[in-house]
Amino acid sequence: MRLAIRRARETKGATQSEVAEAMEWSLSKVMRIESGEVTISQNDLRPLLAYLGVKERAKVESLVASAKLSKQRVQWWETPQYRELLTPSIVQLMGFEVAAQVTRYFCSMVVPGRLQTPAYARAIMETFAGELTEEAVEARVRMRELRREQFLSPTEHQDIFVVLDESVLHRQVGGADVLREQLEHLLDLIGAQRIALRIVPFKVQSLIPMFATYEIHNFADGGEILYRESDTLDEIVEDPEKLRRHREIFERVWIGAYDETSSAGLLKDHADALR
Image (cartoon, rainbow, N blue to C red; front, side, top):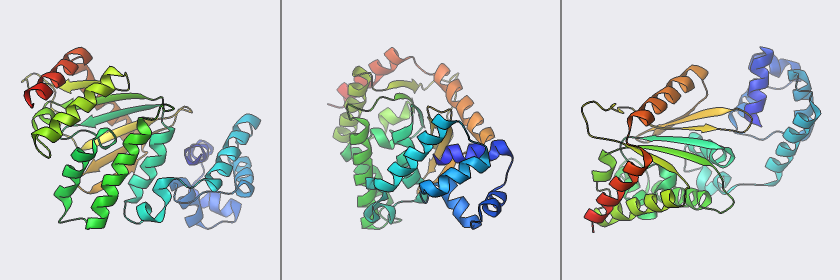
């Protein structure tokens, strides 16, 4: 809903300040609605859509229904025990993950968070023990477990594309047993056709994915966002040019990587070798 509002404003050519003035709201209210920090009431949404030129009845009713639902339902990641311990970008990401139809994961160091086993996630989070409080570490570990459970739900149907650097298969996060369990979990996801995965090989002619971890989420209405993560820092990016650039990088590396069959075979070989 908030992405639709932002796109409608940009199509109209209005600034957030102009929207605030027209609606007799504060600028911060408009900014918080568009960032997803707050929900919007149905009484506020209808006149806003009218001002932005969104008049198609089906579209308006769909957005109003979304507004009503957002007021009624508090998701687990919106509860204080998580919201107060996680970054604003991660909190926003949770909603985007649920709504996305297509997701692309680009990871050059570790398995993406949503696909991590509990032991693998804990091993990663514990490396930040000196930077994050014990409570924050526990919240992030639990968050990744809940994200994985949600992803594995039978009702979830998303197209997931994953690019991993081959180094991920060698990096014994948490030790050999933890890595083996993680690789076997990825193989299970591949076998169940829940993900399509390719591995960037150790070859001179291969593209070198020397970029921070990122993921791109695409939605049914054509919306798209980028989540970029490095160390304990993260951000949601919506700039069209940056999105285009990251999408092109992903596609280029995807084409240059091992195909899905070869990648699955490589995963299996490494998992077997760790036994």
